[in-house]
Length: 302
Image (cartoon, rainbow, N blue to C red; front, side, top):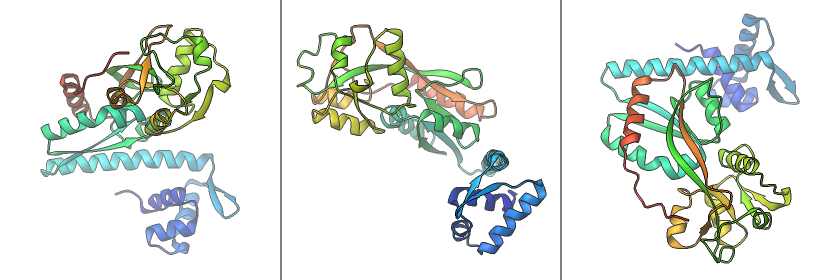
């Protein structure tokens, strides 16, 4: 059974103060303090630094936190396996980056769930860095990512090839078939995802390889939601670069238009990413299902 003092420690980490952790756990503040003190005496190192009224993890505390989260995840996985022996539903956890999680994965999840009603699936949608961190901690079983990752550290397989396109309202794109080059991109008033997102990484990498030099002023806004970016573009605020799949509905309705890049198409890989310890049977089954699943909806050309 997972050590109750470690559970208290993780609650303090999440809540930031002994008082909030005690309220979360239903314990007295004195009991929470005793649990933390017992852990520090056991490991013979302090786990927190005091910054005002808040407790901030030091290096030893961060090590215990990461190890505890991995251990908790393994315990939960073990419990899931035992539940399977008893005939209960098996529960698997997926993580997906924004484009995949919002615009690509849902029909796959629906199709897989219809085929396997005995399996429960939960999905976390975060940026690439956060998803990989959850994978490292064992809090998800399989990641689907659009951003870069250390291919020597994780096991991985191709999920889909994805095209990123230039999109904007009719006023900004009166001639959809005309390729757009560097000079026009400089004046395009770009609304992009934040630095660190997979979409932003591949756009900047594309510009670097194509020797497209854009000044910082070309980006007028950074927004963490693709839906919000599309709404801003539809309102005539600016243009953007995103997955063609993410803009599928708007392209079909005609509220957004697209132009091909003069430097050639921007194609990126979307990948399954997992670890050696991940549940191999589920991953192999889900990958095989995804490979044979018909993608609905026509993706219009530029």
